[in-house]
Image (cartoon, rainbow, N blue to C red; front, side):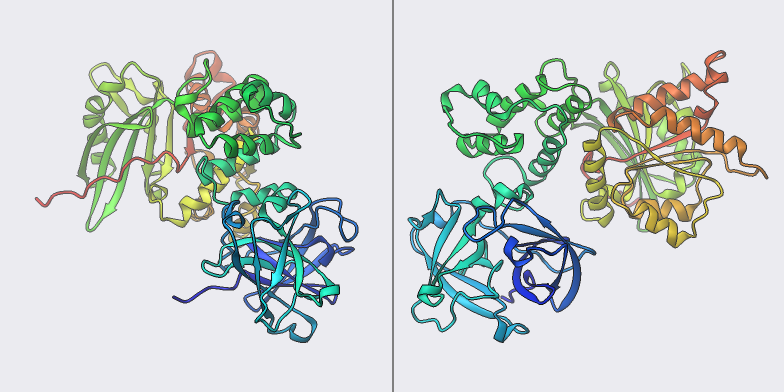
Length: 551
């Protein structure tokens, strides 16, 4: 098996050379003393030099101070595979054989390996550090240039800590590292990469970010004591995330996390409460706090291009589970598309008729311009879909292996954590070239776009490719010499949705569409006419439809 060692990084801070660990595609972990006094450093990753911002993680100032941890935030992402981390108990299983790869002064260009060993009784000062001894048969020692190097298990390459000190009295034959359990106290983002027995990685990562953003957090110590008085913890928690981690690691049950989260939701208000309840709704729906509604039932109308035909599948989801599916059936053009949808919808919706219902059209881009809210749910009674929330989605994101899916999940996470839509306005006479537009919307803090008129196919394609989760646009194309009306539409639309939580958008846009048709309200709600809402959460993914049978 070929091993990928690119995650073992050389760190150069104005001539001071040390080591580092590539944690993900944009962060390198190193020792604070390696980059002390520097605002920037250079990381050499897979032979490539990448500039980086130095981010100290604690108040380390001198040797023997706790918190000898810093992070390099890379100025551009790297495609090198990052390190993999061991669980927190890896050093507690008896004697372990370890390795580290550093850059001592006489081997700065090629690096050098030192073989180490440790035991479960070698934790120092409440395991702030962990003692390491150099293997007696090895010729390399722990010396200058190894600081910040990953210490990893020889049999699996899983990282257990980071070299920090050498014992010069012993000529570098002994030293110390910061174990993962210590590093994570100073840089909580490390928890996103450590395997735990509680919660799934993605849900844990999202929760950590949510808790970090809570503005009026109750005291974590009091919450833990209130939720689990039997634990009798004497620890003082520096953050809500540290308290959640303690509960998870002590009790090893998702139910315990749910109990703690339910209590926390009751102690926060406003946007914080909505964000936490939304997290529970998606990751722990069976533990929703009383009064927090379950997700609406959905009907997903899906169009796929398969072989030489275009196929339509319609499926209803109730409480996230498939209820009724019809199709695939072939459609030839827009007319037969609408005909088949209106034919199949009553049967698919029968089981959800009395529920809070939303219609999601997952489509190729060429169908985005259709007025789906005007299509009929019930031909006999003339009931249009506008009676319900109607959104469109990118059908490619229903493929979990699509790059678009991954990008969209990241943006959704950031957008929900922010708790408000705050769309970026896009004028008709956008001053950017297409490449400039691509760079603009590629910024990670852009979570929603609002167009003043129907966007071009090129602009939509770029927005889809970067994983844009939310977009609004009028279906009418701009054909006026002056853009005054378009600008007024964009201004009113942006104001209407800017403070809304992204989860509330389908219902909010439904109301706006209906108000625009109202004989009185319609005068001031014209911007809701012929309005398309692209609202695409790739986590809401039904099973893929089966291929059509030959006819």
